Length: 392
Image: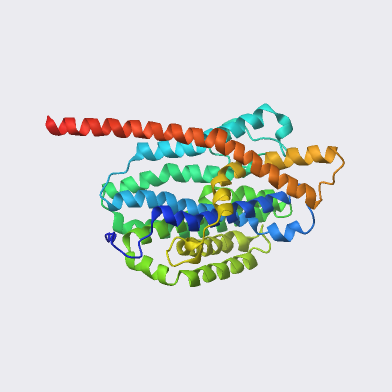
């Protein structure tokens, strides 16, 4: 495997690159919020704005693949073993406490359910909700499906890294990426032809979600694109330098790709959208992510308090937004306000941000401080043990 050039003048500062990614996180969560809002009471003008917002999840997948694989690639590049325990501890403290709190709220207070029924609790707690999720039966907190995809990815990715480093197969990693990417096409075609098409006369949307949209094996495109970018940037500095040089043009290419994806997905629950739309959208977002972390890019240089705050709140917003929108609309409609009004929409979005702030400062940040104490304690023990072994 080619070695990373740590002295490359186009090297990306890990702390600074988050500026570019913060803009993308903020865009992704706002876009998802607009898409989901149309399933509640909403003004008519909101629908065309948020109609493509479901792709915000695909952007999150690309970001996750890039960031998580980038951390692992950085260790491999320095010749360090995969620190699996540290990796999983970080993921646990980052994801599980807020997620479990929301689950407790849902299962404790039925009035919080936005619509329909909750899936069986074990599906949420085992992160397997995205397999067999039929919206005709279970539609409350259904957006947790994407968290399940990411958790399964976090579980498998370190194992793949360990196997490839253990058996010195790094140069062949691209084969697995290409195979999985092509496999996504094959599996989605199979799922459409064997599970959706024969029942197309029934309610198409829940069938398409059940067999095409939700399962992990059909939604790997964004994660694979993110992993690929991280690998290229780590081990092929010439690629990174080229992307840095043309990063602003790549942003435009990514936007053009998204427009192509939009045209492919005009009819979202369709064979074309599921088969070809997913990869086109993922690659398009991948171009934008790759460009946004480059020093020459306008997104890398631009600072915004608004996008940085929205990015920090994005996970909490994703978890609580349906609960908050539902409760806010119910309460305000009881006061005689029209659920379809723009005023209620603004009130809902303000309430979502407020609830996310509470989650951020009362749950996420205290838990992350606890995580840091745990990791620092492990690090201190390691530093004490290592000299002792050297002196023995």
